[in-house]
Image 1 (tube, rainbow, N blue to C red):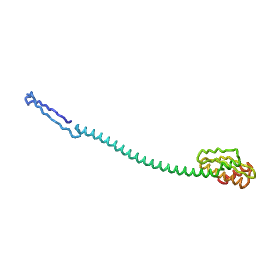
Image 2 (image 1 turned 90 degrees about the vertical axis):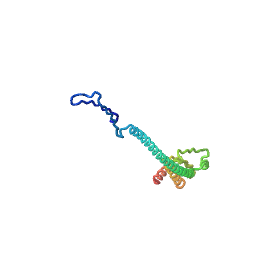
Image 3 (image 1 turned 180 degrees about the vertical axis):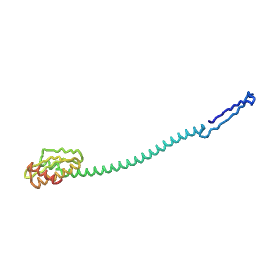
Image 4 (image 1 turned 30 degrees about the horizontal axis):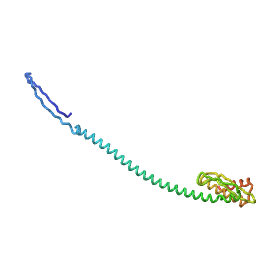
Length: 191
């Protein structure tokens, strides 16, 4: 290995007489560059810089990807909000149509003066509906719960209202059992 060495020599001649002081040779061995302290220090510093640089590069890359994902999420959120607004507007319009089909307060009070209606749909539109009519001197009221909730239930309530109008007002059926049988058959035919 590199370093300073001392080579000491004592010699004798052919008669066996020894040199008392001897000779000293100083030798300095210079190590290869890859075995120097400077190289080791450089390697440690280079490793630290490389590690730090790799972490910074990876962090910057992750931050860039994060910003891209945040931008995509913001775009998709805006799209979903717009679609939600469109769907809600459409359902609100369907509610106006459904309310227009239901009997008005005046119609109800005309047939049943001491009455009220409590109609609180769970969703914007409902599968529940009420119907009032008069045929052959008979006042008929129906409170109906259709299969389904929300929009599917609202479609069923429109079918039910239309069928009750046909069965009672157009066909003149006023017996409850006959109304229910005709309503059952009408729903089966409609679906």
